[in-house]
Length: 385
Image (cartoon, rainbow, N blue to C red; front, top):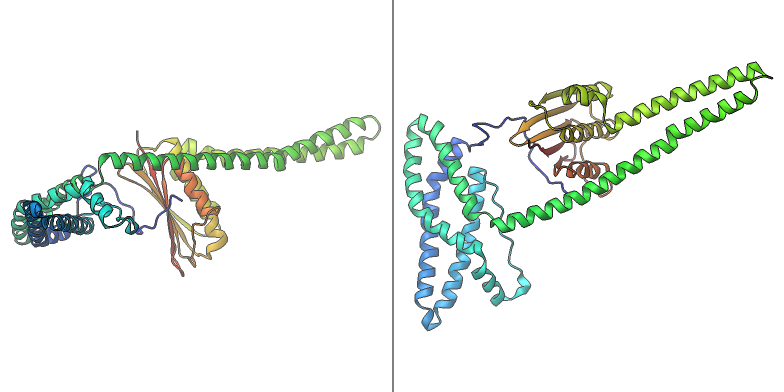
């Protein structure tokens, strides 16, 4: 299931031309503490590997070399976690070695993994770079303008370097993206098939039955046209009622496929219409200009609509909030309520259905719902032009 826990973020717009710079305080901490960490990493990794290579001829160097590589990987993970925390880089950790592979196979995996050698290169590069950053960190702690304007931008540049050297290889990223897209498309096909069955069921059980009843009533009226005018009048009244009900059901069905207000006036008006019909008071904030593509709008609309239905039925909330905004290259739709919480994503459940609908455009649904609330359902929907 393509869902994940996440922090409850407030609406935010991309800053500085789409670059989300880290905070000055965390960047200063990163620069100041990064120097001793880089010094320790350089000494341990470089010295162990050099000594291991130099003494390989007498065999004792082999375990020293392998130990140096293992230390490089461990310290690389320390650097990844530190950069993720301080600079917001979100660099994934390499997969752990399998314990059942045996020691020799684990060593072979370490020595042949490109990430290991990129970790070693990062440790070697960071010592001179961290000296410069440490000096800038000291000056930035004294000069406020430098700390406010320059240090965060240097932190962002360092984060890009860390992503390039400590992140997964390009081939692995492409493979992971292909797997994710394949799974997303498969779930999208399932969601579309479920939607088709729903429409078919609604037509069969609703408008079709009304039209059948209408035809029967008109047929009976035709048979009694000359002999019983009063009965004909009653039958025509029944047919008229069935016709109006059939039209109403078809209109509701069409609205469920793609509401007219969404196509004509966009997300703000469409979500305000949903909120007006909700039995729970709802506050609506929408800021998505320029207007997103139709697929993104419709997906956001139906996710918000289904979530509001769940809020009314299950949450026990007294107030809810809809917030939709742009964030980098995506549209974020978030519904929160002050209900009892405890909502979970279960296979085949309503929240899983929301995730499946988002997956049709490679989106992700996040559910945060601790016991006693509040509940936040968030959809991150890619929005490219």
